Image 1 (cartoon, rainbow, N blue to C red):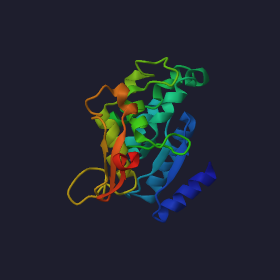
Image 2 (image 1 turned 180 degrees about the vertical axis):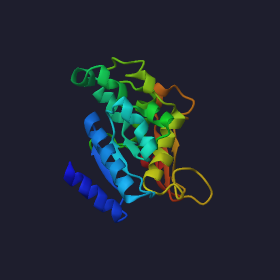
Image 3 (image 1 turned 90 degrees about the vertical axis):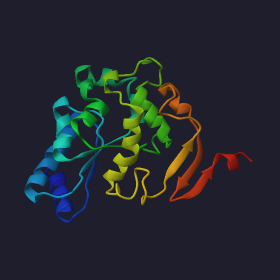
Length: 223
C-alpha cells in the first residue's frame, strides 16, 4: 500500500491525527506496519494514531498497539452479531484475536469504545452489555462468545468515557467527573455496576446532562 503510507506520512508531518478503518487481521497488521514506519521516520510526537474497529487481530499484533501508542477504537456491539457466523468464516485459530478487549487493555493499549452509529444502535449501554457479557443475538452463547476476552463494567465504562476522550485529545476536558471538566453525564434507572450484567441492555436513561445543562429528562418526555 505505497499510496496509503505516503498519505499517512504526509498527514503526520503536517500535524494531523490519522485514523484508519481496519477489520481483518492482515489489514490491521498492515496499518500497524505503516504507523510504525511513519513514527520511526518522522520522530517522536503525541500523534495518537488510531485504528477504527480493530476487530480481528493476530495475537502477535496485540502488544504492538501499546508499544506504538496506537489507539484501538472499537465497537463492542458488533460482536453480538459477528459471533453467530465468524467461526465459519475465519476458523477457530484466527478467532484468538477477535474483539480482544481484555488482551488489549492488559497489554497497556489505549482502547476507545464507540457505537458505530448509524450502522449499529446509538445506545452505548448495548456496547457495555456486549463487552461485559459477550452474548450473541442468537442466544447460543449464554456464557459469552470467546469469554476469555470479557471485561468488567468498570473497564467498559472507562473505554467509553476516558478512553474516547483520550482518542480525541480531550482527556483534560471530559471523560471523568472532576472539578474543571465538562459536566457531561447521565442518570440511569439502575446501577450498572451492581446489577446482573445481563440486564444492562435493559437499563433506561432517566436524564442526560451536557455541559451542566439538562438536555433530556424522561419525566418530561412522559408527559
